[in-house]
Length: 341
Image (cartoon, rainbow, N blue to C red; front, side, top):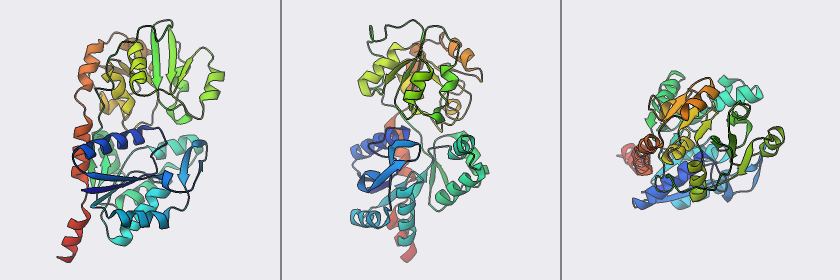
């Protein structure tokens, strides 16, 4: 198939949506499909308000329509609500092309808590965006149940994976010459990740933050006793996971949490709140502690055997994720043949 993905989240951004798309595109390519990703990098851009390192496309409609027609896709997927996503959605509806979308952020909760934008207003926009499509992909059981009650339709499951060759227990002796135990957060350093809940904890040893983002300088100033390692990737990131003692995820807005699987694949137990993402990935598996008392969770997680974490992560694969994604797509020509047959 010729698969077109029109996404506001794409290179050079670094986030879970981009990493998911990158991994699935690679698997689809390995399965013999041709995938074209159209992101903001194809258009004039401006900095996103409050996140200047994230660029958003300006008026992509005319050029995007031309690019979509030139590629002549067999199927279209639009993952994100943004200028590229809105323009791609409009072009598909104009052409009569079926398309699928996917859920990547609890935007309603975030915008209400951080900016005072009514949750129902954001939810109505998301519902309008996704319900126009022919398949709405979500990651977990709990998300599917929640979104169905809020009026979303055509919901389909799309699991996530982890590269267990890249993320694995590796030799990390000498990497972290820090007081033990080391409690580590990996991810975006920004307000929506609720990092204060982790950085304010009274924990023994060391708190380590691996990542970059708009609040990095502010957090460094406010928490001088925390070690900020900056952004890491690939083998180097695996060494940081492997050298740590507990992975702490303070976020309350995750829809899945790829970093959970990366940490577990490296043998690192997890401490998190019992919210969407951690509950769906870990559940009652003995590889993490989910508790509204994050300090209690972090200390209890120290006792979890690392081998259990690695074995648990081996259940997840990007090949399975890509196959589910592929099965959820709605072929354009199949739709056309039904319409005119």
